[in-house]
Length: 119
Length: 109
Image (cartoon, rainbow over all chains, first blue to last red; front, side, top):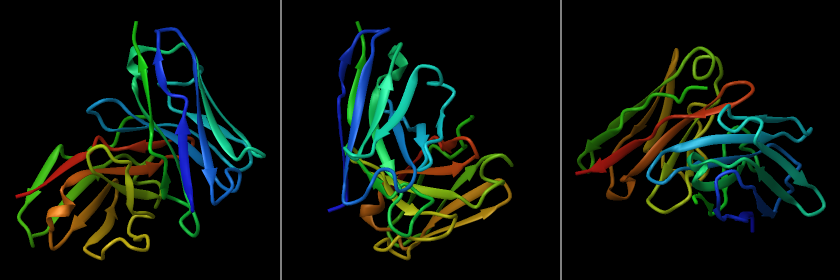
């Protein structure tokens, strides 16, 4: 079965760090690009970051310099290292990926993991 | 990296058609044919409904269609059904980043 499973969310104080994981099954994380997308409570979707098959990475301006996307090919897992966290980073974080013949849309989504930044 | 502009809400009766617009710029919607649309029910992960402006993934009803003109993309849902009530988000590739719209809440009256 093709699926993504996120983990690592939780409560963290402002200025703290957290690392999210996204374990893939049924396909390899390095075969195409993969992204993190977040959704603040009651708000819309916000693209956060992408890592391409060749290793290039890009970030939303709102997280640039604080977040780092990476992957571990042998563990078939995507990561998001989040540093210097702010209250406005509070959101459900989804990992998302294209799949099969659909290479230009997020076809596979995880269930999301909630990150709460609060003192 | 400004969000694409969508109406906050639209509504229609069962059987009717509704269209949701998504306005960007020549740097995103207008510059690439990589617009996608997502349906999200409360508490659920988004679901891909349209990609590459007008293509439907397998399993998505042909009641859902997409188009684009200039910097504005549109999602049309015909023959509205109760289960179509959800939030809808457009999304566009923009080179070094990707951008979503603010979302549109579809109410089926």
